[in-house]
Image 1 (cartoon, rainbow, N blue to C red):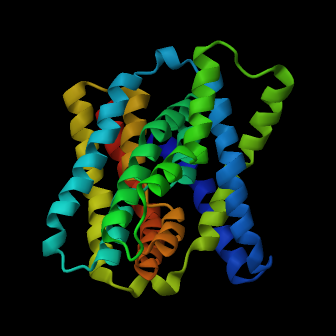
Image 2 (cartoon, rainbow, N blue to C red; image 1 turned 180 degrees about the vertical axis):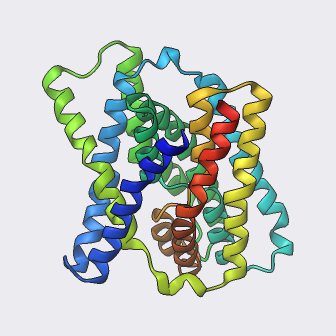
Image 3 (cartoon, one colour; image 1 turned 90 degrees about the horizontal axis):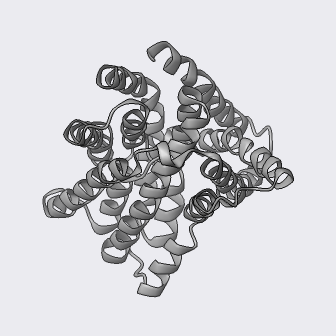
Length: 308
């Protein structure tokens, strides 16, 4: 798996680097990137989830085992940070950025690596991981903003943010098509598959374009807390869960992978919109993404040892 995983990382790193270079060199106008990321988030990535989950053999996936092993570390980590908040010497907005940096994950990286490692099964496993993690992470982060952010959210606004999330809706639609046996009609299936296939290259370019290397020196103490939790605590809890529940093989690898991913660039948008520390968030995203290039091969080695 190690050689296969390193090969899988090559295109991912290349696309992120190309996105950064395109933005730095102004190859396209800066106004191109926000609509491109919006297109990925609202159309292309949901299409990939719909196709992946509607065509997968969900009956062969240990979803009941994966769910608590994925959700448990996120809940425990968020609860631990809330308890420790009074000793972290962080104001409310900075704490929301540390929390996001600790539990949010980059969908594009996870999907790209899972697809390269496990093929179509990887898309289905990644979609299941997203179905479990996306609602949970959004609930926890939204509640954190409601409590600690500079802006205060209403209960209705919190609920609307969750139920209208396009990634959640894409997963739900795909699963319903699968379990009901309806599936996607042949013409529609090819259309949705083609849309979904565009999500990862464009999404990774957007990840690279969002990197701000100048921000990496901001509040390194807080960045170190978020990065330590993300790259050490979360994977360790996931590994413990896999061992405890007896989850092995590709599902276990997917669980550990998704709990080890750098935080998503969308965390910056959420921080800026909901009263977080957006500068700290940008610093965390950039450092974790760059460090992930060196860190993820270590994750693959751990996965190899644990899953055989």
